Image (cartoon, rainbow, N blue to C red):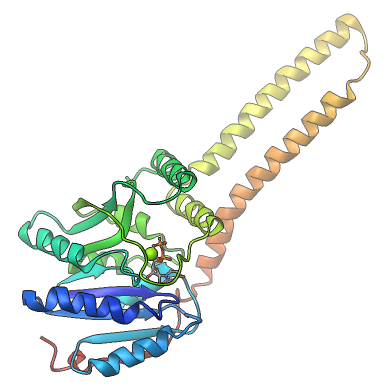
Length: 318
Ligand code: UDP
Ligand code: MG
């Protein structure tokens, strides 16, 4: 098998057949043997039914469909998808046709033509998103690159084609909180970044809200940097120094000028400010602690409920 597609799907009933047929139409005539692994990430619509129908429609194809017991998130779906394929290369692609199979073909060809690269990753040079979202996404990349030792390429998506060795490296990371942008950077390997323009979604809506993106950003930073913890220490030291200096000033002032009328507003202001800073620091520590707690439980990242494998999965596989 030359290439395995891994496609996470959450409420994509109107898209799975279209994306599969688009991949077939593009890669079929090229003589590249392909398999496809769909992961139904606990969709609440008819995605699983659509995948079963698709599998029945192409019984001869190397088509695997995995169904999760609930929604575990895209990262879990990617992990599950990577555990199934057998191809020499893997292509991660979304189910909504925002990422064109034609682009995947260009990426695959680029990877095959250069032994020096292990991965070809698509990135959006220009985002077709609102200004506010673009502003926050740019800010996120600036921040995470500052905080982390590894490099995060701005705009790089999960839309990638990579060799088997890189897929194995991704699978070797046992972490529960998976942040694929971080995983891709952390494992290393030489990556060629190729610009692309994302299309409009075929049907349905994006699963990302501003809140979920914010949570994703925090997960990324907490997962790949411990600098926020150092920030807590440094802030603590700084505030302690300021407090000591201020106390000395007060003592000297009291000794020279006698007892002053107390400034209640200033005192209250300081108490509130310090309380806020302390809670913020506790919150930062809590983020790390909660991640360690969940990881310590050693729960699986996802649960598979059902797996359908196409005919070509066994002895017929090329
Ligand atoms: N997805 C998933 N689980 C989720 C959310 C999304 O498997 O909990 C899949 C979704 O079906 C799609 C891909 O991840 O194939 C990207 O999601 P989406 O199109 O909503 O993200 P966007 O393109 O807006 O960044
Ligand atoms: Mg999309």
